[in-house]
Structures are given as structure tokens and as C-alpha cells.
Length: 112
Length: 112
Image (cartoon, rainbow over all chains, first blue to last red; front, side, top):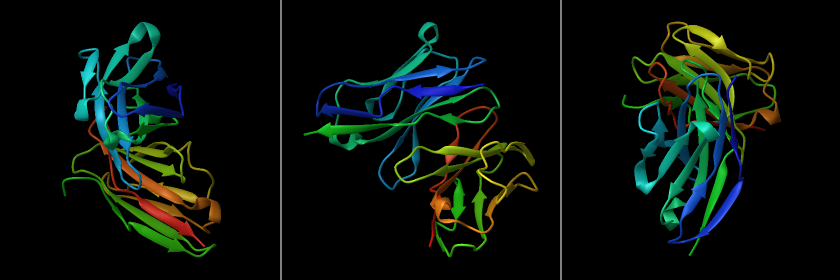
């Protein structure tokens, strides 16, 4: 069985400071891991994905995430937050052909 | 089309009415998923198809919910005798094999 835990339901940062959104996963196999972003009243957009290649994955809009098998983590980071980053972020896991499982989401607030 | 298409985008139903929500996946995508996203919540898994086979329907909340994908392409989610608690955005996603899922814009269902 697979599952995802997003450790913070809300994160607040000042514009220009680093962003860290935490995600831990549980999986029976070698999973694929993803981060999606959802802006208010918008669809889900893929930020980045890990599929057993390089453990440090770079995505769109300056985001990146590092897959750490020993810690079963896939935290999302960005060096400098922008106002447009305010949104909800979902960590997602998939074992092979299994269903796609979402975490509960982290709402990111960026303070000017 | 280039992406996952869902119709209608918005649906208002009177309580007790039956509704049918349509999903046109990206051509050639093997996997198709349905999710329910209540206001302010993350997407909750409903059901999953691989081609025409419904491999997992563990997330369907009651026997009023039914999904089909008879020819392994277009899928329909049907909700019978709608209730107010069925009000949500219904998201469809498709994916090629075991990679990331591509989401449609969703159908916002409001039961009055």
C-alpha cells in the first residue's frame, strides 16, 4: 500500500526567503513521486517528478525536490519565494501502475 | 485535443437528480482516474481504470456512484439521486503507463 504525509497544512514565508514544504511517503515498491500545484480556482499543474533517475529533481518556476530513500522523504524547496508562489501544493506518490495517491496538501502563504 | 477534457465544466443539479460527468483523456493514455475535491480539501481518489478495466473502485463513496470506460478511452462518472454532500469538483486525470497523471480542469457540481 502507498501513502503520503504532508507534515504542514499551512506554511507562511516572507517574499524573497526560502521555501520548504515537507513530504514523507510510504511505498511497497520503488515509487514515482510528484509535486503538483493548485492555484485558487485553477487546475492541478505538475511542478516536478521523480521516477528513479537523479535524486535531485528540478521543476518549473525554480522549485526542486530531493528524493531521500533512507528518510522516505521528498521535500519541495525554492531558494526565494515570489508572491505568485502562493497556492496549495500536493505531494503525490504512485507505485508503478497503481493509483495516484495525494497528500492532504500544504497551503503556502507568501507575505510581502 | 492536447489535454484532458471534462464536460460540463459546471453542473447544477436538484437534489435527487441523476448526473453524468464526462472525461476525454489524452489519446493513447492507458490509465484514467477520477477524484473528488471538496471545497478547501485535497483531491480524494474515487476510481481507476487501466484501459477498459476498472481496477480499483475503493474510493466510490456509495452505490449511487458508478463509473465506466467501455472502450478504454472516454469515461463517464454517473451519480444517481444526488445529495448535497455530493457537491464538489470532480477531477479526471489520465496517464501513459506508470508516469505522471495529467489533470483536466474538473467539473464543479453543485447540488441544490
